[in-house]
Length: 277
Image (cartoon, rainbow, N blue to C red; front, side):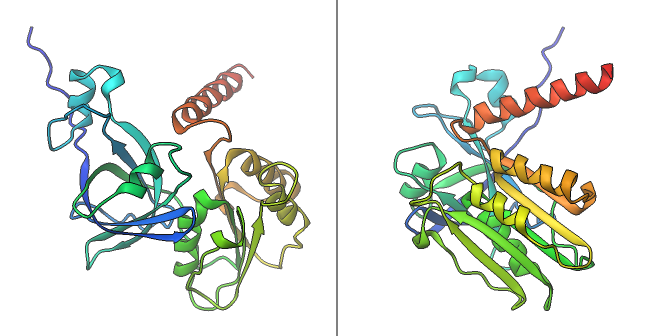
């Protein structure tokens, strides 16, 4: 019996053009890319593939081949990042990285990236874009959601109303965005504040007197505060699922691998409970 050919999982290639530290802990990497396809969402994300030290992979990088020919501990490390902007005319893909020293994989890579460095990725995925038919918009998130929030703000049609709540470490981490003059952007700082991460965002949403009309909400970031705001929007406010985009990008105390495993286990348990109900 012949051995089946490895499944095609060929990654796409981007090459670093330039980098910029836009805040003390945010690094913007601009990459040239001929293979990115805009899916029309403002939260479009890519799965970045970081090679393991000392391991050489055949190019073009194909994860089907890698998984079938390399031991698991030699597979590239995958990290999910939101695309900040895609400039089709210039073939430029921009990704913002939170950087906290040597912590993690992607941040240190961005801090050391040089023009000409290669970056392989899969995607994009994504599922949210501002609905021009909505009467107003609610955007909530932390640093990890800033690229998607910035992209959404800049895609809102002229005159669109939006309330935006963002939590960062301190004033130095605030960013400037383009967009409609009707946007009310409120920054919250964690420095010097006690309590759980995201408490200020939760309180802001819970105490907000919603304007009249249909809202479209986007709440992304650390899973703890996203879950608490989810409860407010669905249970207390009575919003429908089509009005709300929710995603726990990460979980405090876990890297992406651990958080994705936890999410998968939670989904499995929910499905099992639903099947036996």
